[in-house]
Amino acid sequence: MRISELSERSGVSVPTIKYYVREGLLHRGELTSPNQARYDESHLDRLRLIGALTEVGGLSVAATRDLLQVIDGDQRPELGDLMGLTLKRVDGGPGDGGDVSEEDLAAADALAERHGWHVHPGSALREELARVMAALEGSGFELTPEWLDGYADAAGQTARLDHDYVEGVTNLDGVLRTVVVGTVLGERLLASLRRLAQASEARRRHGG
Amino acid sequence: MRISELSERSGVSVPTIKYYVREGLLHRGELTSPNQARYDESHLDRLRLIGALTEVGGLSVAATRDLLQVIDGDQRPELGDLMGLTLKRVDGGPGDGGDVSEEDLAAADALAERHGWHVHPGSALREELARVMAALEGSGFELTPEWLDGYADAAGQTARLDHDYVEGVTNLDGVLRTVVVGTVLGERLLASLRRLAQASEARRRHGG
DNA sequence: CGTAGTGGATAGTGTGAGTATCTACCTGAG
DNA sequence: CTCAGGTAGATACTCACACTATCCACTACG
View 1 (cartoon, chains in turn yellow, green, blue, orange):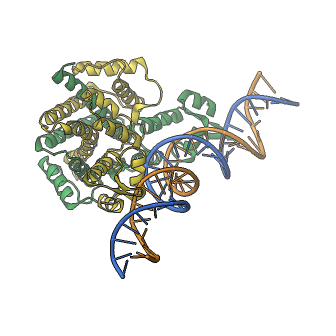
View 2 (cartoon, chains in turn purple, orange, green, cyan):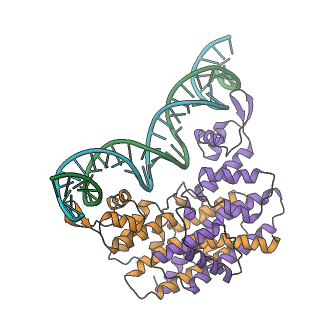
View 3 (cartoon, chains in turn cyan, yellow, purple, blue):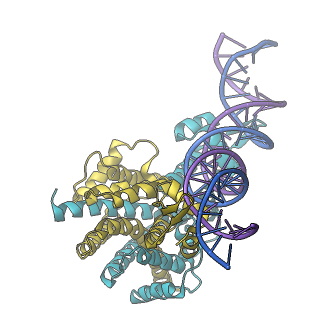
């Protein structure tokens, strides 16, 4: 198909498609002449993936490109490594902005240890957790063990579900894609469900 | 204290403090003369809250202002309503970008119903859930009931923990602030913990 | 006294994510 | 064959956002 049809079928404007090609998110169409290229289902598929990661997953175009390169690569990165990659979000997320104190890191480590999680000292995940915990405390939120451990248990449950799911994926080519999509969109899914559950719980407890 | 001291103690630059005042996130200092104002602990406290919501929570300045206005207001909005307010994130989140199909909405409703959650038909939460589920499916992720329901259970657990926590808050003035902070930062906490748990689970299952 | 600091207003900057325009050049209906 | 309209690729432009920088009149204080 030509670019205009790709645009129509994907809902992505022609200039934006060209922009994604420029930025390395989408492979070029096959040139049939100097100013004519053919696009196929793989382009449509890719645009859907890009849309899912950026619009729904909230990733920046740059972060999306990095992730897509991992998916495209031949190598098989460790799943643990992959999780770190997706930290760079559109808004920077909690992944930036200065240092974290030793105390905060210790509190994060303590929580991780209570749940049997081994955390690498230089991990970005560790710093992020510490930063979030520090922000909660700094906002007058008292981090009780019940709340914290309950959250950790819920997180552990989703992690087990993710791994169960991935083990059930037979198509080897799709594993990486599945992990990336599941990690990025799973986070949004969990957030949505949490809001919904909060609203329902509010009705249950306080009537309405 | 003067603005320079506020800046030093908060780590926020003087121009940025002025910007927050302009944008309505921070109350003006008390004028002691036409070009001199006094700031106090309440300003410091507020700057910490702003920082937590924007830098860690990922909210835009506009969304932060809206939320702060709710916290400041005399009225006591329903907790359920509050959840919807915080949907507007820096990156727009999944809260925008076109319509959702009836099928997707039906799938979202079915999931909600299985977990006893009553969802208002016009709810932004409902659309968001549908959008995320549609994005997952559109990315080749097969939404199995085990995975989906497992996530919903985890979300339900966090919602109960949140409400337990809020019921334990005695300071009535702080309830709204607690809800907002807990909702926004709790989401980031859960995401961090999930990544950490995923990495640990990977090591547990595949060695390393 | 004088210089560093201040409140408030207005204008400018840098980044991210697209849009718009332009130049060849090709394709396909009539 | 003709020619309106689509196309690849490059470059330039726009828009929103979150700050920054300047300016001015003025004031606190060593």
